[in-house]
Image 1 (cartoon, rainbow, N blue to C red):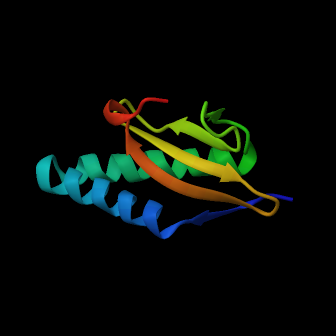
Image 2 (tube, rainbow, N blue to C red; image 1 turned 180 degrees about the vertical axis):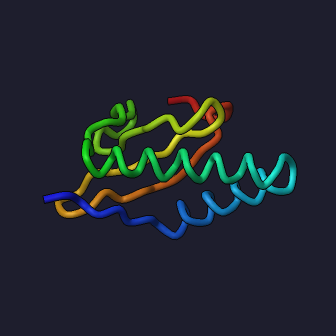
Image 3 (cartoon, rainbow, N blue to C red; image 1 turned 135 degrees about the vertical axis):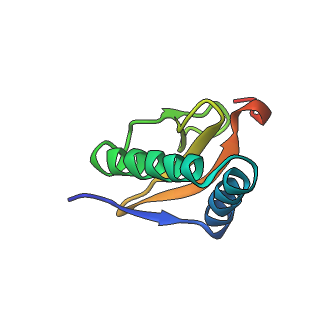
Length: 94
């Protein structure tokens, strides 16, 4: 049975911030490309929940690179994949 994707409020806010930043500073087309990338990665996660690599600090949390600038952090739970956040790779020490 496929797991469903669920977003935390923090992750949803971070996602909106990235999209808004891209629209304001780059273009709608770049923002749409980012949205498409996220959607494709989420589709992959539904099929392959263990796709991302485990983080060093908490092995229950996985990191999936979205693009050069951003990574998605998530946790595979019994019936769902919980999206924890989207972070700027330049600020991460994973």
